[in-house]
Image 1: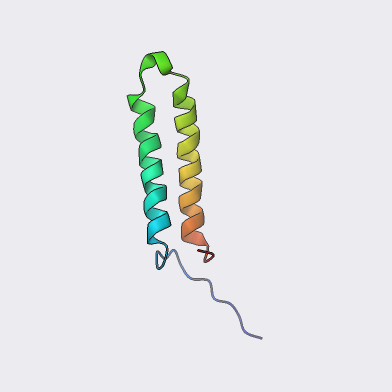
Image 2: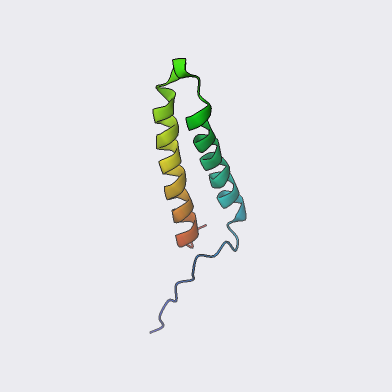
Length: 66
């Protein structure tokens, strides 16, 4: 029986999804501060998107499924 070795946090073969996840996270982070006060409720959606982006980046770095 062979043991499966888990690779570290590698970007090999995952550059494109990582780039777009970072772009999404950057867009959400900037949106939190740049949204007009009249549309204040959109800040909550941007904050939720930032949480999703962080979780997505962690998933991309941890898994070998991509």
